[in-house]
Image 1 (cartoon, helix red, strand yellow):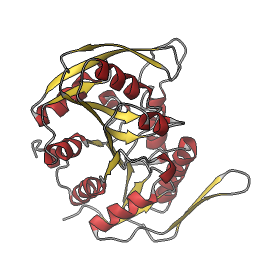
Image 2 (cartoon, rainbow, N blue to C red):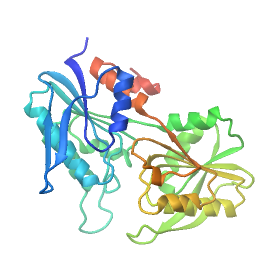
Image 3 (cartoon, rainbow, N blue to C red):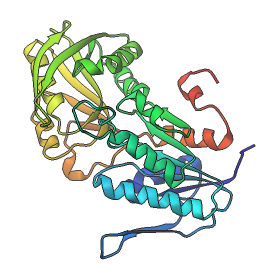
Length: 318
């Protein structure tokens, strides 16, 4: 039996389509609430349903504009808490500020930890997210956190389509573990693109490739794609090293600035992403494939509500 009464799902303005798809999987209606800005740029939230002692799930990916959507999330948490919700779980498919998870320069903030503190202080009881930039972010929370992974979903896409003669490539040394996880699922070898990022700029200079890719189909794997600089630089050097075809598979499609046009002009045969973030029509291009993850998030929500193991979704011990 569920530990709390009826399940309620609410959404901010970040990605309502995803929240609606999650509700369709769960067989429930999306909760009614007002979330908008006054003319003075301040955010207002009002929950329009009774949530007393209910199991409340707030779906809000931290998409652009990130700070507006973060404030919406925090205010929604506070509103639910003050309305006496039984438990509040925040569902954050994409956790922004995840790259700032350590002090890699003097006098900088660890913003990933700061966001975790905001969420906890606002009154969340639990967090459900997907493919964090670094596993250590889990430890920034003093409340339970479940991190899902879309890597099996992305791997299944290539396996079902029969993409063979495959090498999985990490776009940098730090992505070697992600590449290894994908390679294990696809029974493939790995390669690593050695890169150098220039200061704090979004400009990347790819240097060399560790591993053999000549005549192979190469799959570049990463957890997010922002400006596309890393992926396009990696694709170019892989092409120069003799790769026959080059695919790219990422979980979070930020696609900032001119990323889409840069990727469309790159040597990539296809870019495969999930819908953890909304992708407007102007950022889509012919060689982009978007895989839905609403059923995975919906199943995790069902398991949390019912007191079942979330890890069992991925074959972990129950």
